[in-house]
Length: 542
Ligand code: FDA
Image (cartoon, rainbow, N blue to C red):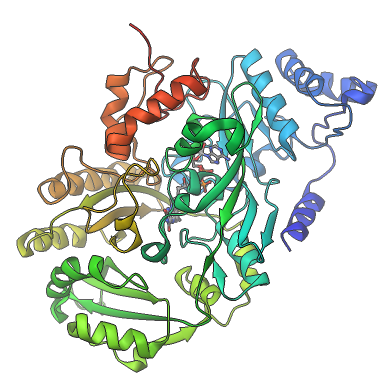
């Protein structure tokens, strides 16, 4: 099915864009005349360089799109998820590789032409770092690299970095109803960015992060070498499983360990407003959700609600549960540990794991799993996100102040994700993601808006909220989740970044693992070719 989509996309690709000829044909006459009609000499030189670094057998079409190309805009926009960046600086070229050779050639030629590279898989970066930059740059968009090969007998899958989580989940479920993979809930998120930054979802209390379940990877390094786990070595393999792939190279594919899920899982959702006692429920939730059995995941989603137009806005908290087992087992556990939630058989729905994926993605469980293959869902909104981690339950007064601030902004959403379970068992240095045993839960703060003029006000509110939360969340460092990228935490100077400067944000994301990431980066990319506003810095002897 994934192959079908690729073919469908290919059919959509119209004639008339820059066609790259294989070196077998040299710089063909046709290509030459196409180029002089709309390419600058730099474009021509880049394209010549690209062709010259491909093996003769690699015939390539529709790989490089210049700003003059008719498809440039639609490809660039296709996976911009945050409209805050839709008018930002544009890449000089979009490269849409079909194989490793194209990526190798792009890296080599970008270096020769002094251009930066940004790599995009699903385009969900909160700060748009996969497709914007203040320095001349090229975007390598991996949407063609998305084959998924599932081996149920040996319980693993090889997945192209440009595949989405939806494509991965779909492909697993097409082969087995008792296997799954522990990653995020949004099906359009790309596996390239998601897994290299950690990746958690509804079954991570049982199985850990997506990055904890990577067995091998293929990556193209700064010299254009294609590396696997063995040839990159354990340090680099460690770094790309949570430290962000973009600092180290271009991840081509992941080999993932599939996990066993039961044939029946159960979900429920209980929504309470402040007037219905939500504050007390959150107080209790903070102290128990991280202790629940590994099979039980209950997160709390805080948002504004207007019960009817005559009433003032208030806050509601939705407790959404996924249980890896039947209703009967779930009820015996939740009614004992959290009776105040009032969960009964009527609130619970049994389904397969893949239906629970649809459910948490906001689809009806009656829908065909094919909807998970839709990667073109366009966002119509701008947003700003931030994150925190909590080690001690926030007191009632702290929660009340938080809810007051939430009511100020109708489009704000806070998601409280319980840790514990498997996350507590994995050592905090096992991968670059350090927030394991001491943490009760993580918080994601999110605000969205439609109108560009509102940007300042919304971001201002988000920063005030973050300030307000300071006394209640982790300190030294104030922990943050790398996959919820936040440039307010700090950004690298260009072109040279000092270790001290990067520590501002680096320690928040990676804590004690930051130093090891710096050492790995220094060896893997000593000239800091893979620089971005929050890439791992290179150690320099000053
Ligand atoms: P994108 O393509 O923007 O890449 C993100 C970063 O990774 C960039 O720096 C990019 O250069 C780099 N990168 C991408 N592909 C690479 C490759 N092949 N090699 C090297 N570097 C590469 N997170 C979570 O843990 N659980 C969740 O449930 C969700 N849900 C969610 C929903 C929505 C709507 C959004 C917008 C985001 C999330 N996230 C999330 C956060 C998500 O995990 C995070 O934004 C990922 O980095 C997105 O990966 P993409 O490949 O989609 O982004």
